Image 1 (tube, rainbow, N blue to C red):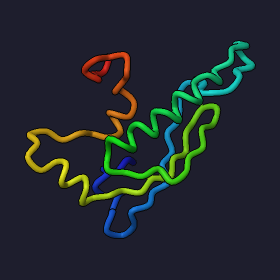
Image 2 (image 1 turned 180 degrees about the vertical axis):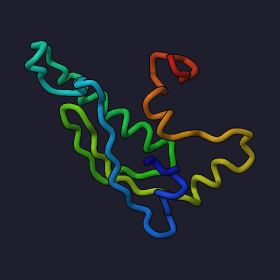
Image 3 (image 1 turned 120 degrees about the horizontal axis):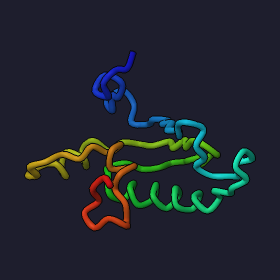
Image 4 (image 1 turned 120 degrees about the vertical axis):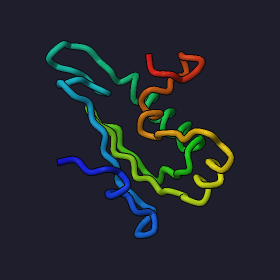
Length: 113
């Protein structure tokens, strides 16, 4: 059973988290897919660049990461005070995981396609 992030993440206990995000339905993120004969290695650079960009936008540091064939393992450190300063005076909040996967340099507003 899934639990809300508010229960799973406690920056007062530890600011460091090992996050895992993966592809579904046997999709390839990077590497060579032997089933279809296609190479997705060019995406590795995209993922690395995106991690760096988002670390600069959100209140996190990326200490380390591993980009695998169908998943990514970033080790991140949260900065709650920086995050709260960012939110002060803003009428909206940002859902970081949603922004990680839907914000795109190809869409001017960063909205989901």
